[in-house]
Amino acid sequence: MIKETYYFSHDSNAITDTKILNMRADYGLEGYGLYWVILEMMRNEKTYMLDLNKNTYRAVKTLSATNIDVEKYIHDCINDYRLFVAKDNKFYSESFLNRMTEYENKKLKNKQNGQLGGRPKKLNSFEDELQDNPIKTERFKK
Image 1 (tube, rainbow, N blue to C red):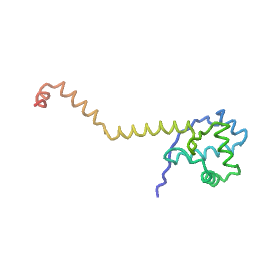
Image 2: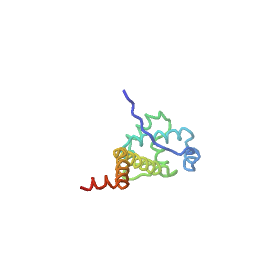
Image 3: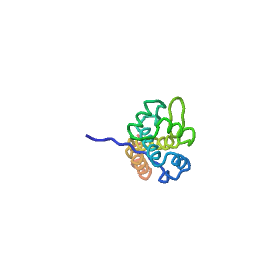
């Protein structure tokens, strides 16, 4: 069975970000780990957002096996540290959403380029060859 994994980028110096440092001052490295658990959960969602409700808190608690009060932690990350944004009963990381949007756009562009399969290059080289050879040009004009 093939296990599907999903990619997402992050800053290699995230641990020293001011917002993260403020959160770590209150929640320590366990809070830092919890932050990444939540981001990984967001990565698995089509919208890269999670519901702001009891079911999400329970899922985070179960996945992380943390002793931290997850509901309070998430609300602190939204209101105090500004690591997440809450909107319409959902929450998300603005920087993560921007990164994933950039990633999705790049992936789509690569897919479109792959579907072209080098055809524009072939077409251009054929047109160049026709211009260089007047006999072929006359033959293909008819």
